[in-house]
Image (cartoon, rainbow, N blue to C red; front, side, top):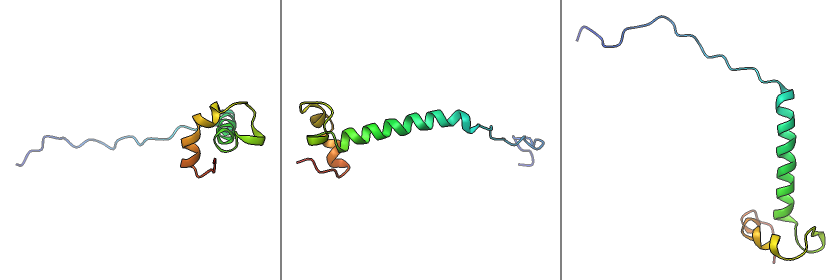
Length: 74
């Protein structure tokens, strides 16, 4: 086994991460932050006195998520 199937090569070029400006990330970060706050409101507080929507539909839709996250609902 004096011969190898793989020939050694010269130094491979190293990967350089692309620079991503903060101005490109900021709008998406704000959008997803607001989206998470809205979801947190509907899961955690959309019932009773703070209800924005009438009826039990939202409560029943997020009922299991409410228990999973530890919010009391009954």
